[in-house]
Length: 298
Image (cartoon, rainbow, N blue to C red; front, side, top):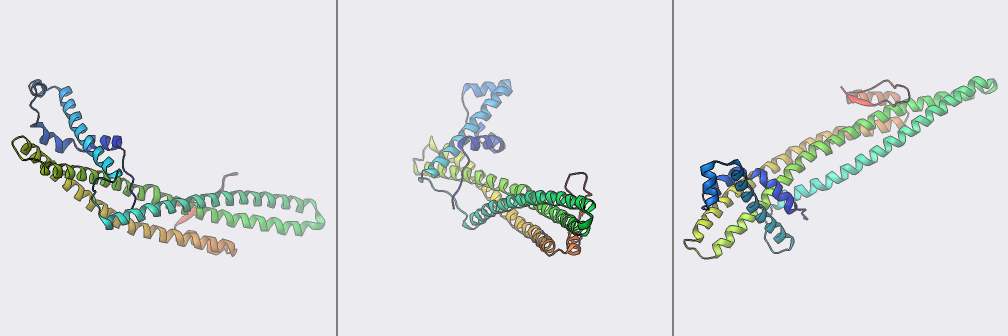
């Protein structure tokens, strides 16, 4: 599957926040310069911030190196085939649901315009019915028909708008919340692979008094990021499972609503339209002036 990686800047900004805890203890002992000794003596917040920036920069460098290496096809990356297949399917479904919402919004707009025309046409027929005695009944029948169609259309419009609102909530809130977790998981995966590569490279080199402390520190950091990666992977897996269950439930109800409302409208079944609204606990507001009625949840 194709992956879109965070830019180095984004990776750095993210890690500047989440790595404060783990790195503070692990790297503090490595600083032997006079500036750090003064910081300890003076307890200067400015020096502490400088140290934090240094740790942030080290992590940023490793992340950037890993991302570039992967993009150039040189570095290895950890892949969970099952999880990534689920993520790819979710991303594809999200795009398709967004397209359905867009089309339903177009349908709602077009239907609203048609209802306005029908009401105006009904008013014109009613006026002619009063002013044309010899065609009073003919104009009157057409006036009532257009008004009846507009009334049924208002009910359908309400059902469509409720469908749009529910699917948009699913896409923009429920699915998007999971997508945020997926991005955090991907960031954790990049970090994990960056520190894995780091320890692998160090282990290929010499092991002496100078390198052993670096290897030990790298091993500690690798372990921290491996645990974080595994936790994020498990969290995303669980989240995807619950999302799938919720998605099926929401779409099941909304698709039944949409089908029943459209079918009832085009068969002229006002009673079935109203029954559909009751079934899904939807009520129509009374129209106010030229404002179309909307559907609301209780």
